[in-house]
Image 1 (tube, rainbow, N blue to C red):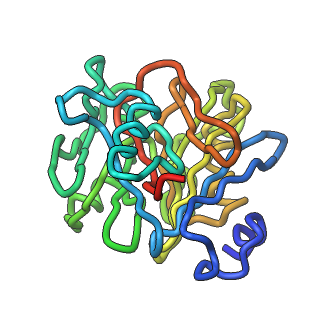
Image 2 (image 1 turned 120 degrees about the horizontal axis):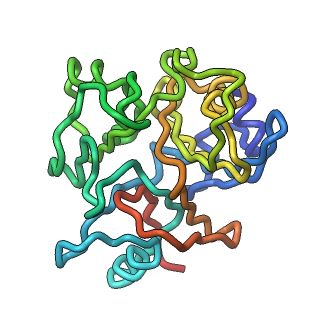
Length: 245
């Protein structure tokens, strides 16, 4: 964890400004953008449907809605896999309301490559939790999104990841500290394997648990870096809410 603090130039988490910190880094020959969220001071939420019941789909739509109340989208990223109608594939909770139940069984595609997991946001903390453990513990999440596969499980890479894999995509995911105080989001600039992406969280960031969010549609909103990706319409979106500049 000290390596991560040094990476972002922070002395302690308590000294961090209440806004997501984003940084471009290189690790093991691949380029990434990392965004850290201090869960003790920042407002991280999930967004899916607007007031009319239609999916927001783009970062700009959420930003426009927040502007009505003097707020803005600070940092944001696509938040898991979804169906053609942009409904979430797995467990989804928004502002305490469950939209989709937990899916505990194996299935096709990356989502069903068990173990998968749930990103759970509670008061003052966020945790990546393996799905079967999540079902057993039944934490009360204010916001939650299920995706898969897990990238790192209790300090170990997913057992199905191959070091010599040839499957490379732009990928994004999230890892959390053991105490839940910090969530670190990553999106690759280069096409990477699952093994490479998992090692970013485990070996470079020293995070005990991390979750894959998606690949082909990976998008990032990071205004401080002059970046707000557009393109394919998204389903669930994770983002911090800040006062409008």
